[in-house]
Image (cartoon, rainbow, N blue to C red):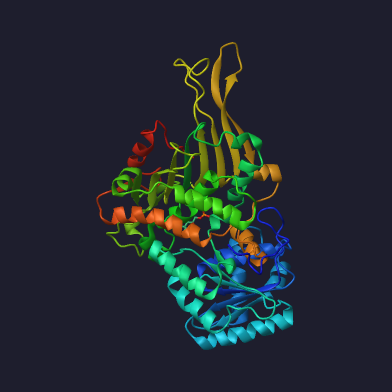
Amino acid sequence: MPESKSANPLREGLTNRSLPEPCSIIIFGATGDLTHRKLVPALYNLAAEGALPQAVNVVGFARRDKTDESFRAELGETTRQFSRRQVNEDIWAGFAGSICYHRSAFDDPAGYATLAERLDALDRERGTRGNRLFYLAASPDQFEVILRNLRESGLNRAPGDGWARVIVEKPFGTDLASARDLNALVEASFPESDTYRIDHYLGKETAQNIMVLRFANAIFEQLWNARYIHHVQITASEQIGVEGRAGYYDKAGALRDMIQNHLLQLLCLTAMEPPVGLDADSIRDEKVKVLRALRPLDDAAAHKLVVRAQYGAGAVNGTRVPAYRDEQNVNPESLTETYVAMQVNIDNWRWAGVPFFLRVGKRLAKAATEIAVQFKGAPPVLFNVARQTLTNNVLVIRIQPDEGISLRMSAKVPGAAVRVEPVKMDFHYGTSFGKGTPEAYERLLLDAMSGDATLFARRDEVEEAWRFVDRILDAWSAQDAEGLAMYSAGTWGPTEADDLITRHSATWRRL
Ligand code: BG6
């Protein structure tokens, strides 16, 4: 893969601190939820930490009628609501001075021509050097028209020595064919080296720590294979429902929404071989190899190894919640899955015979994301005998909340009798490092400003993940209502998912 002409040679993968360059960030879809809840709070937090480049312009591009002032005031309110740290009004005022609003329809060439003039003027006034980071935060059906207009207006080429990059928000396609089309569309305007496909799970501090845990500690890597590991469970359980996003979610479902991207990325980080270096492509090369080694599921395997389910009415944290089909804007006969549990096999030397179980769902009993590596048992002699069967060792990487790592092992209960019980060695980020973990979007925006694509999905990663998921979607489309299990909101999902894992003499973890 060619080096980006814009890559910053001082920054290499996960090893160095970001050195973001002065730039304009142009957000398409600036009046939407993502901008208010995630992007601007993330930029504010970077400003509060002094991590932004000396000069930055945030230009909101959208259709609605607003002025710079009204846009700033709205963002001020939502940032106060969604920022992870309390907003300091002086810092906000300083940061808000860099925000402006550019009103235009996405399909109006004149809006792009005036945007170009405005960006040139901002470069002169504020020293942003012609560097442009375009953020596609609009709905995906607008991506084509935005990308075309960026190309036709010449905005995809930065003036002078500057750079022009594009960040593409998820969902990246709805199947392999549409992901390929979208990749071709992006490629017609921006080279791969300037394309940043967001998977916000990669920006989570704890997801980045998977590689550090594996490759900065000599003890784990020796055990990280089929010889010692019985199985791996990767769970992302949510208590929230569709949260006003039913229009999107009812067409997507949990497989597309969470498994194709976030869970397969976590799987790749857990299963990949050590990369030859920490640069973006060395890491992404190894992740792609994992995706290529996933055993494809034919119809019969998809029915046997993948459980899809939808939540019915129930109670979450003591509050009654409606069934999925009764949520606003959901088709009352919807067959969309809000839960998926599946067994995945990685057909390579390291993992032959080790099942990976993935599980995601909305309206489950608890909100938690973790990777649990379950080791094989000690030999059935000495302490591990019929009289007393030991619990196997489990290494748990808690992605969220209460980020940390724990190792379950067996210990002797004090006293004259030999009684062995499981105990936990536990590391908590909060207590060990004394500070909160940054939001994923903070890290990802900083990296895109620095020209580091390590934590973004490469074209082939996205396509390989879809290739695997497409087979399951095909199997389901032939099936309709039959095969959709139900679970009550507030529970741990359908009993069918238990059958999936008990076949391997294991049980799902209660998080
Ligand atoms: C998004 C999905 O990508 O990830 C949402 O579209 C989901 O449906 C969210 O709720 C989960 O992210 P997080 O960071 O809260 O685990």
